[in-house]
Amino acid sequence: QVHHVETGGGLVQPGGSLRLSCTATGGAFNIRTMGWYRQAPGSQRELVASITSHNEIDYLDSVKGRFTISRDNFRTTVTLQMNNLKPEDTAVYYCNRAGLHLGYNPLDSWGQGTQVTVSS
Image 1 (cartoon, rainbow, N blue to C red):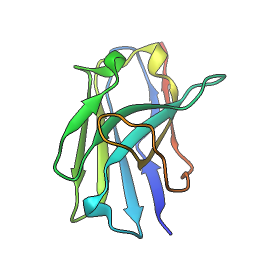
Image 2 (image 1 turned 180 degrees about the vertical axis):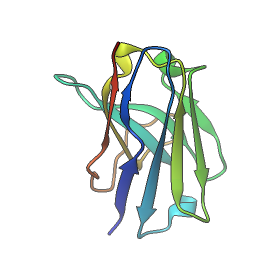
Image 3 (image 1 turned 135 degrees about the horizontal axis):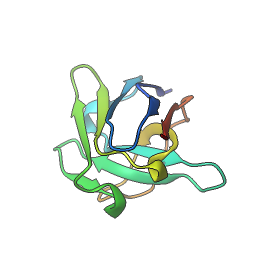
């Protein structure tokens, strides 16, 4: 069974930056497309970035130019660098498997997520 542990969230002012990290254990990480999802209060969970095993990357339009996803197959980690954060980025962020080209396909169980709060 695959488990994900997300870290790096926090409280940041608008325009600030955070770097989220997800460590996956179990399964064949290196061949999977991975993604970062988020869920804001009262909203459905959405996929904001995906990265294939060959580093093909896609982003939700609202985060393009501000977020950067990367992966380290040796360490089985996925990272999300978030710059120029906005209040609307406030959410709990999770990592999970994803489909190609930002396909919503979270096949693994959800971790506890990491809270990102953007507020002045």
